[in-house]
Image (cartoon, rainbow over all chains, first blue to last red):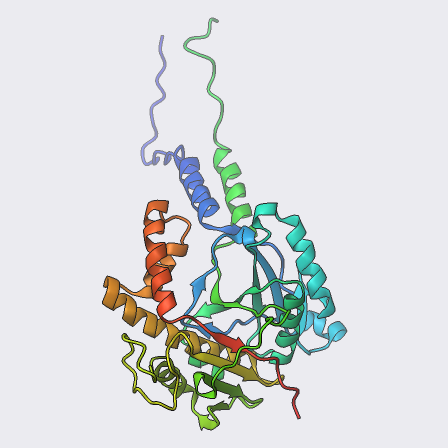
Length: 160
Length: 202
């Protein structure tokens, strides 16, 4: 004899969560396709200047990054508050820039080695002296294509 | 008791949790931005074999001092006027050989856009922000002129054409077609921006 449990009145039926994984997977794929991996964490303050005549830096595998700026507050005790260069995950001197570029270039596949761009991510309060020194180093190792990476915006905001 | 139907269902209730974990991992380790900036070529280290003689009137000198003030052609200038001054200089067409120039035709300014050179000098203590603003204005002057010519020849902006040309997602048939157009406009106003080594401050 079949036995029927009578449903209690006032008990709401449970919302089906069967499609929840699908929704989450959709989100996941969205983020996987539109984002790129972070390569290094910043040790320096890095408020880039604004510029309006920018060109997009396509193809991340052809770019070498150099960060310049004042060390962040937690490093200021050790490294002082003068702008420093950050290569990969550590602070470096101007003289190390050339070696770093050569090292990074050697890591890239042969066919890309001649088309590399050096992206200079420089804090807008840094002095040009340091940048000129970096540029000299880049010229020495024949890394002539540079990109002064900036935010998109009105260039006159840099002056304030 | 014999089992009815197929094998028992696998419990997929934790699937959502797993997917969430992955999602959060990707949210944390990735960034959404793509970088953009001003592209520049540095001069090669070895000097050219032959000394090129350049007439003074074909050089447009821009000096930035440590306070961010501009000295353009030996005269103090506000940054806001730089783009106009650079455009006038490039577009001048002093010797009449440039048939697309619309500039003032001043005999004491540049002869032809292909001969005009902008020379940028800065102090070691110049702020990077100021330097970028100046660079931006000079590149802007070139872009304005190139846009004008591209509008005249092809009816669209040079910056659009170049962006589409550089975009790797553009199909190669379109790219090949754009390549000649971009090259042609670039040759009308070649970017000759020389950066001298910085002065030591004193």
